[in-house]
Amino acid sequence: MPLLRRRRNEEVSAFLSEVRASVKVVAVNLIRIQELKSRFSPHKEELKSRLDMAVSELRSLKELIDRGSPSLKDLSGDAYNSIKLMEAYSIISESEGVEFIEENIERILRAARWCDGSISKTLKELHSRG
Image 1 (tube, rainbow, N blue to C red):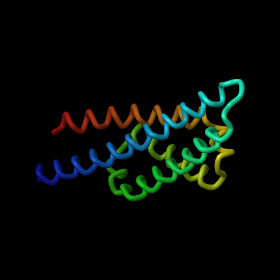
Image 2 (cartoon, rainbow, N blue to C red; image 1 turned 90 degrees about the vertical axis):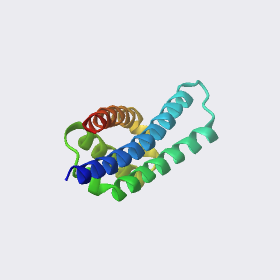
Image 3 (cartoon, rainbow, N blue to C red; image 1 turned 90 degrees about the horizontal axis):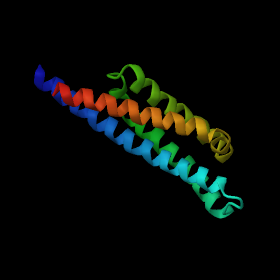
Image 4 (cartoon, rainbow, N blue to C red; image 1 turned 180 degrees about the vertical axis):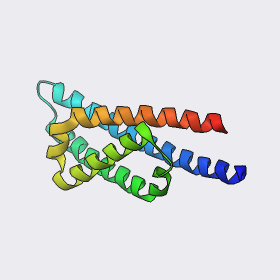
């Protein structure tokens, strides 16, 4: 039984690591968008490109979450909730596009940071259990 539990922990850990990496990519791109928007005369082409990338990255994150959904059932608390929140933002951005990203960039970035921290905490707990 401990071998099965360890294998399951390894699967969940691998899934969470992938999600965390994807969330970090989203966060970095959102930070870059904020930097571009804070300039007096933003580079419109780069801003549009970054917004399109953000929608694409969120779509990729949703696909990753969908593939790893069996691992989600093993989670609880903040890790589960923060991943589901990022999934919700992904679904909305896929439907509404760059306008949604522009209007909600701070919220999405805050959710991404919460998700990153929650996953980090959960990964530490999984590794400490062995």
